[in-house]
Image (cartoon, rainbow, N blue to C red):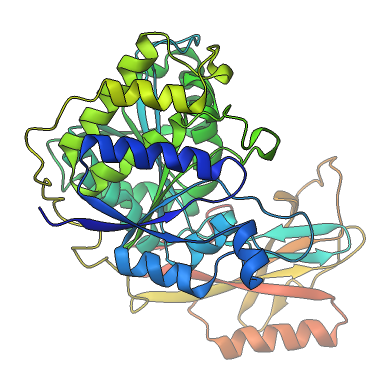
Length: 460
């Protein structure tokens, strides 16, 4: 059988030790891969001045698959996070985390087996932030149709490939009606293409409550970036912590699998490191590559070792890293069918859908204004009529001004009876400037003429 090349990034601290554990286990299990070693993290910074050198990214692009040990992001010094750099550079749009109960690891719950798929690029993690005034900071929450569809379609493909029966969409569309509303809409559209898989949705706060009450009820969760970050760590805590939490980052042409815990430099070289998380990550990697038989063999061997009481100290045992690895190797049963399983349709095999602006009409402008206290705004300018003003999302005009803490940042919504142009919007701003209104920025309000619904005016 031809061997696949996999890029190996050992990382920092305990990274080389736990990666060596994976190398030994793979060799004992006869996994048909060969490692191509590359550098990332502190060693790469010392050698090249770059935490992720270009040659490392090229190696991952060539192999298409990488296994990464934990890396350290230096405090100050200007070096970017290795994890974020790799995810952005390779467009790794889906983060995959498994939370599964394991023998001999005592937790409050049992029979937990949840796969969490988190969108990995967009949402508030796009990092688009501004100061609007000295008292108001703004972060843009970006949810796109294409980004949502890519990760949601990938989720259903994974469910089909691994035999998962139910996919649950996590959202906050009751409050974020447009952004999370789009996420939920795309989920329902994609789910309709997989009728054999049960699909449902749940609001994120209810999801968290249900997870800490009855986590065994969930099978596969798909979430936007921010909720996914929080919920995936919550799920890790349910099954024993980050020490048993694997992770994978999936893109159209590349995938990087990693342990999500830190580099633990204080125990590096002492034989105390627990390789469980990166071993589970490597099992996920094998599943991704189609080596299902090898993945199952290694998982059974690790489960048997833990069930027999061989555990590292952080799990309540006495075994060293080497002793724990030896116990896993001793339990490996040779794989009879080593042929890789076809991976099925890729997440991007079907062109991502797009919505044209052809039928959309611009019907108004939100003008954000700096003012101490409720501003006096002109009611009518050209085709525009002032409909409302809000402060921190709460309507403060028209009507009685609520008793709230008001900051110096107001949204003033101007709406027209007929479609307007950008020239109309520019004329509005010109007149406001003439009247000494301290406007900060604007947002155009659009109406889908075909469906006759506002996409930005839902809060009016």
